Image (cartoon, rainbow, N blue to C red):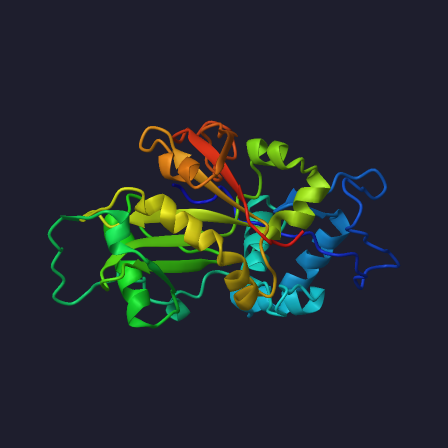
Length: 319
């Protein structure tokens, strides 16, 4: 399973900026002012007047760091998530993309204030268990522990994914992790759900999402970006059982953490590595294949492995 092709974003709602008597209405897709083409960045249409305002604003604060610019921009726009937290990471990403298009130059990175690189998670005195086999009935019930930052379970979960998942561990945007433990206290698997792909043609067709609908509803979908049965565990049907268990609780867990529920789950299964059997057994539906492009592919020349796109409708999810 791969990471989403691009984290989700939301359109800014209509709001007034301190510009010469002009109303910028973000609610109408494809709008333009005086026939001038608007920039489309992270699903947001940014008019020339707003870009000019940003240019002047950045020049007026040459000593500010990029982080401070992003936070103040969120405060100026009232750009917050559903829990009222500033969306400064999304704002920083938008500023970087506008800079890459030549609209302005951001202040240089303040290297002396940057965090040290995050080290790979380690478990002291770790020894890999010997392979063992069992029937699903012999290890049931399997418990899913919600991963909470800073806990011993979170350290083990991060270690397992970093060491044993072929993609390693990468957490971006809204996310939830689960550590699975069998009835005997043995840890058997890890799951990670995060922000969905911003665009995915097979998924959007299957859901009947138009461009405006996708912008409005994308927050109700989460991507299963990592799924790992620990390599020494041999339990037939365990993977599909875990998918079923997480499907029964993730909407309420997401609501508790982020203030909104979920309606759909998605995942991308690399076809040359996996058959997707556990997803089909858990009633996920394959709705098509990706085109073999990465989210960093601006010129449509970078090729990545083709993946099957799976969807699952959550029971009792938001509508």
